[in-house]
Length: 264
Image (tube, rainbow, N blue to C red; front, side):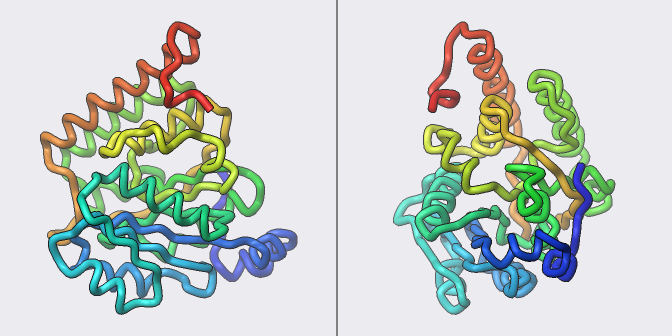
């Protein structure tokens, strides 16, 4: 995996510095009931590196939209709840419309460290990757950060299955901290993906199917009362959806039946 760099290295490291000056980096935050953590997340974003921040509020029942409107970011509010995957579709379409060269997904629940943004964009800036995942397992930070044991076991089992089927060597497929190149988002048909949590697994299967390069950086995670987390039964439903997506991938690769997820 590529070495990570900090923001000062990004500005002074040869050709990467020029790339950074010409690159429009947009942070997108898919939000639902994130009022308690949004400000902390926003404050830790390296604003000198980021061109724009977009908050998409999925019809929250708290003050997420109001707090977002008081900050220096763009707020889009869904009039109806459309789900986590549907929220991401709005995030990415809006970022592309606003001219993003790199789009970051950062959960506004303060579970992932926004100060890692320079690291997560570095492999794309260097031309080494099309997608970068913030992995909670590269540095052993998952359990240390408080990940529940059942989530840890499920994550490991699903990641093993995904690597086996996809032929990859990714340490974690289930992170909510990601960076995508514009070319990637303009190529994969992500608008056909689920509006539910399995969107995250589908877009990575699409990445492999369309031969895009995936890199990872290590990130710490924080589990605490205000941090969002899907419950046990939603986790089970997500796991079943991941396995179903792998079956669609195998079917498309073998030519038996090509699901719309894998049609350009």
